[in-house]
Amino acid sequence: MKFIIAILLLVSSAKAKEIALSFDDAPGETTLHFTPDQRTDELIRKLKELKVPPTIIFANPCNGSGPKSNLAQLTKFKNAGHIIGNHTCSHPRFDVVGPERYSADTLKAESIIGSLMGEPKYFRYPFFNEGKDIASRDQFRKWLDEHKYQNVSSSLENEDPFFSNRINEAKKQNKKIDYEKIKAIFLKHIIEGVEFYDKLAIETLGRSPKHIILLHDKDATVLFIDDLVHELQKRGWTFIDAAEAAKDPLYSMKPHNVLSTYGILAQFAYEKSGSFKPYYDFAQLERELNAALGLKAMKNP
Image (cartoon, rainbow, N blue to C red; front, top):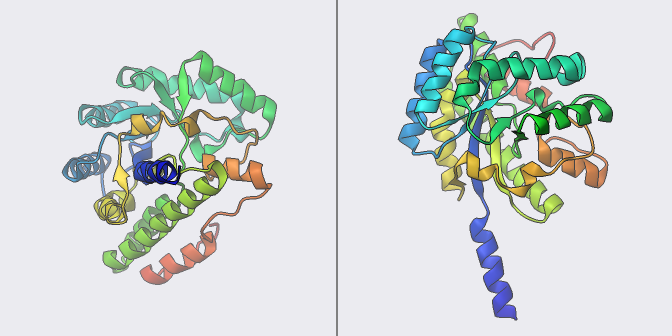
């Protein structure tokens, strides 16, 4: 019996530490680092060189350079083997616009990118926000089912877009940017999040799921994605196909609460314990980045 248990534990551990990439808010806008085309091409190039399995690109086709340009860029992702998911057209907050306007915005996105989406159709809530009340949340969950969407949340949340915010502000102010220093802070922040949420999953679910990490089609993430992939691989993580990860039972489970911002594991941890605290202090992260870039504190962080 002890031998059988040991074998089962070995098999279980062998399946753990699996991770898929996903990128929200694609395609991005023009910045002082990249045009949208440059950023798209660079991310596609890096993912190919890294031999990362297909990712899910969650698109906002109404933002950035507009639907026509966005469709062309998203087609590049599709042709490179990645999966296109619906992230609404204009990235509204559910708790602000309500289910009717939210579903209309989601349908508008589908009218633009529908030809690029496969089966199942993947959806992700902007901000992970499912509304402010149970009735509205359930109304849109029913809408997703009726329109044959799978809601694919993320199990690994972080603040990767904030790094792009800060390096672009530094460039705007003609600051000298030490990209190696920023990369070190970026890697530490993301890796700590991966380790935090994997531990949270084991404590909450009793297992390490096929993780899907939340990243964004933003400058810092594209600049440092190769270093992030290599660092995770060094720490024993195996990259898997995002469509395969989305089959994990975790992403079909439906939390009862409407806790937003931190992803699906945070929601289940909240249900289990009645509280949830993120692994990072946003104010401290801002101070650290501002110090590294020579920037003053934001007025409205």
